[in-house]
Length: 318
View 1: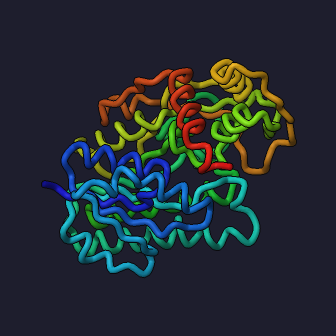
View 2: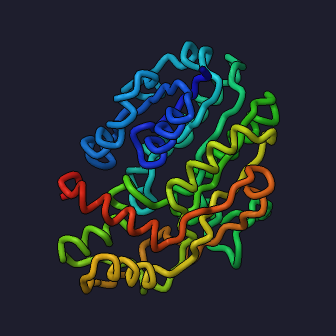
View 3: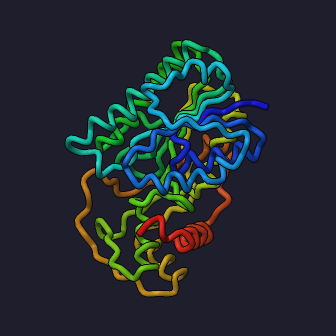
C-alpha cells in the first residue's frame, strides 16, 4: 500500500482529495493546523469520513514546527494543499500570515523533499489568481503574469519556488492552477456558498461588482480527479491549469441558484473589491494532453449538489 501526504487535509479540496486517495487504497497522512480563517467545526466535519478509515493518520500541527523528515521518508506522494486562502483578506497586516503560510511553509516543504529525496511525485496547489486580468483564455505559457492581490502574489511566489526546486534538484514537482473550485464543503466565505445560504435563509446576498464578471467554475470532483491524474503523469516541472469549462457570469450563477432553491433572491450589489479579477477562463489543452483530464460536471448539477449539502448541514454555517 502506497502512502500519500495531504497537507491542508481538513480544507475544502484537501479533505475531498484524502477521501478519494483512501478509496483508491492509499494510506493517507493528513496534516492540518486548523487556522482560524473559518470555524474549526467546519474543518472537523470535513474530516469525518477520513477519520473513520484505519488507513488515515492525522497530525494536527503547524507545518513550520512539525518534523517532516520522518514523515516524508515513509511516503510516496505529497499533495501540498495547505495555504492561507482569500483574496480580499490578504491586504494590510494580514499579509504577514500569507507570506508565512504560502511562501515560507512551501519553502520548508520543498527543502525537506530535497533532503529526503524519497517522493515519487510532489503536487503543489496553486491558483488561477496568479494570472490577474488577462484577455481571453489563460494559458500556462503566458509570459507576463499580472497578479493583482497580495494573496495571488504569494501563490505565484510559491509556484516559482516549486519550479526552481524542480529544475535545480530534480524534484518531481507539478504545480496545479485551480480555477474557482466549488461544490460540497466549499469554504464559507466563497461566493457560491454565501449565495446558497442567502437563498436558504432568505437573507440579503451581497454581490461585489455588477455581477457581470465571469469565472471558470470547476467542480470539486473534477479538481480531485485532475489532481490524482497528475501523479500518474510522467511529466515534472510543469505548471498546469485545472479548469472546469463552466464559464459564466455571477448573475447567471445566481439565476441557477434561484431556480434550484425555488425562491426569489434578495441581492445587494456592492462596489467591486480590490484584488478581484474581472474574468477567468482556463486554457485546458495542457491538462488534457498531460493529465488526460476533462471536466465531467455541468454547473447546474454541481450547484444542485452544493445546495443540498449546505441545506443538510446548515448548522455548520449559521
